Structures are given as C-alpha cells and as structure tokens.
Length: 426
Image 1 (cartoon, rainbow, N blue to C red):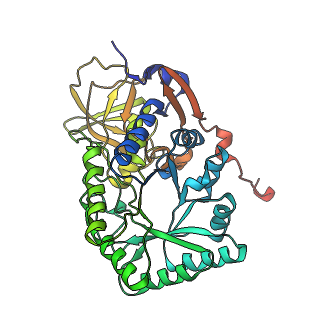
Image 2 (image 1 turned 120 degrees about the vertical axis):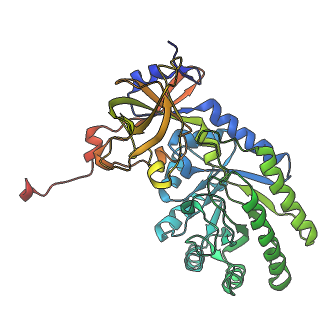
Image 3 (image 1 turned 180 degrees about the vertical axis):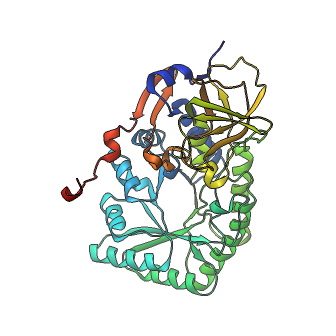
C-alpha cells in the first residue's frame, strides 16, 4: 500500500500530525507559478507589472512569499491591507480594488502609501478626491470600467458586462465627466484604466474583446479630452482545470495573444503603448493547494448512491454549493487500490446541498481513510466560514519534505472569542 506525497511530504502523515480538515499548500508550486506568469508576461512586453490577487489566498505567509518573488499585490479591503503591512510588503506595489471602499478604507490606504487606487464609480472618485485634497496627499488612480463583454464562466463570476455592480459603464457621458473631474482634481493623478472580464476563464476571447473596446475608448479620450492612457490593467481570471478531463491553460499562448492585441490596438490607433498590468490569483494559488479530510460515515442507498461523509464540507469549501464547482479527489492512503466504486463525497454541514464531489471514482472508502481533494488552494481558505460552529482548518506550507503550520486550527475558545452574554441571561 503506497501513500500520496505532496511536495515531498507524506499526505497521510500530515493528516495525522496536523489533523483534518487540513489545507496544504506547496511552496514549491506557488513559487514556480509566480515565476512562470512573470516570465510569460515580461518576455512579451517591455513595461509590465504582475500583481497577485490576494482574494484567492492571503494569510501572512502568502504575503511574504509574494514579496519575496517580486510581485505586486491586489488588495480589496482594509483587512487585506493590514495583512500586507504586517509582513512589510512594499505598499507602493499594492493596488486597492473594491466597489464600496469606505472613508476608513481610503484613509488606511493613504496612510500606508498604497500605490494605486482602482476607482470603481463616481461616488468613490468624489470621496477620494476630497479626502486627498484635505490631506494634501497625491493619489494615483485607475478607473475600473465595465466594457460590456461577458467571460465564458459562471454568471456569479462574470464581472465586465454592463449590468454589473463593478466598474463604470461606457454608456452616456458619465465616464468622460469622471475623466474631466480626475484630471482637474489637484491631488488626483489619473493614470489609466482597469477591467476584469471574469474569473475562471479557460479562453482569452473576452480579454481580446475588452481590449478592442478599450482601444477605441483610449483613442477617443486622447482626441476629445486630451487624456493619454499611461497604464492599462487587464485584471486576472486565468482559469485552472478542476474537473475530470479539463485541460491546463497554455499560459504562453493565453498571454501572448493578449499582448499582441494590446500592441496592435495601440499601433493602429497611433497611441503610445501603456504599461500593462495583470492580476492572477487562482492560477497561482489553486493548483498549489490540496485539502485533506477524514472519512466518517459511509451510507449506501441500494440502487441509488453511496454517500461518503467527511469531516469538512461547505464551511471550508463553499464553491461546490455556490458555483457548482467540480473537484477531483483520491484516497491518499490507498493510491494502489483500484478505483472501482462511484461515490458522492458529502460534507458534514446541516445542508442537503453540502456536497463536495458527486460521482467520485474511488476505492470504496472506509471510516478513517484520508481523502485528498485537488486544486483547493484558491477561494477555499479565503471563503471559509464558521457555519455550524465548525472550527476553521489549519493551513500547512510544505516544501521538499518539510511541513510548517502557517495558520493554526481554530480552537473552541476562538469560536466564542469576542462574544458576551448579558448577566440577566445567565
């Protein structure tokens, strides 16, 4: 009987040592992917910036890894900013996103010297401009646009169509008014634009369509408003293969077409080429992580289905319930056994929809087996909840056979920390 090894570590031993559910991240793979996207982008275009999208996975150790690899950082909240600052991240390389930044958020961002404010709407522009003027602090700004294209992905993670909570629509005169306001504001430095066409995209069609739209806009603003675009942020969204039979994105081809299109639209319209920025998150973190569970109850419904319940579920990975996301898994302690049964891997939460994987092909699981679910490095830890008062799992960083805990498992005391009970209720 052979066991699964992940970045030199025996997975079953990790489950024994750290308990389950357990998030396991490969430092080797994280670094390899950060370097790969930097190389693929920078070899094709002379002025680029690669940002890691922190929303995918951002404990403090990940911030430190991103810093050590020389990537910038996409942050979306004061909490993510605080996390980055806590490890000495160079905040001039941080881009602050979000559709509803509060005055408190903007104050913190200005205090720590965030490099770019990605302004989502007119209200935010007015608030930021007034705060910057009051503080006499210059802020560098990109406008997030909704170019009216839809990525080939789940509708919950399509983020560039016109009817979307994110970004300034290109309809009417609103955008031009914002450009005029920003260019006249004494402490606002408008550099260019940002778009994000969606998440988990396996093809680059939507990027290319958005670039064509932005090319026309940039030309119009230069001719009619005198505004020259210095920076263009094309967002993130590069997908990864989750389900059986899905193929890895050819990163060189994916990014190569985007760069070629950006160069062409500038050349055809007689514009100087702007700085290009990209923000991968899932592509870096997703395949770098696995989640380990212990099998508990195995329930066979004759002629219908066998349910294999594990000690985690939608509290540590809500994506199957939220997006109908697909995952693959193995029994980490029984890799040599034939996968001769089809089972449904069910979570332990009190929801019928708490199903992690339908129709998983495995050896018939038994109580105590270790299930390893692949490609869980992105949007699992970051989206985890305390539903059913389940404790959040630990996170272990592995490299060349060494395992280090970078996030401790919640204790029961952690679950009730900050709560109080009025005396008359006791």
